[in-house]
Image (tube, rainbow, N blue to C red; front, side, top):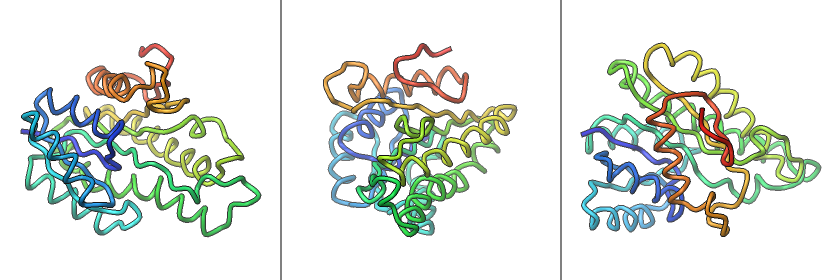
Length: 221
């Protein structure tokens, strides 16, 4: 059995994606800072007949993040799909004039170095098998700078560029790197932004293996 690893798993989109892929036959590794959180989510999936397990890691702790992804592959099967979607922290959401150098550095660790660490852990296996998917989930500031959320906007732009370069480099090897941009509030009442709808979108992106960037509200090509 192959595995989807959801980095930044929570009760909304992370759990919905885990459930969607789990019902398609994937085992599920749920990663977040709190072991209690991912144990609870894994328990819910297990009761639905999905093989799931939780792992605690802060995405800014690169050694621990790499370790838990390695343990997940050993416990559950090789990671064929990696979703990176941790929720940005409040200190990354300040205006550009109020954002400090340290906060920019932390946002970079969170959204760029965290992604790079996770990819470095799972990519060798994907390349060896000749298949795999990396799913990056971002808000609209990844493509349109927003001075009201300067840390996230700056770091998301870097994550977006890194993902685009990986997409171009890895597509010939059968590894698909894709970004889903969500320009609205998840679970805010619009059915397009319901967690289950977004999870379906991510499944379609994984299966379709098309363009790098998809924005909710646009048609997948």
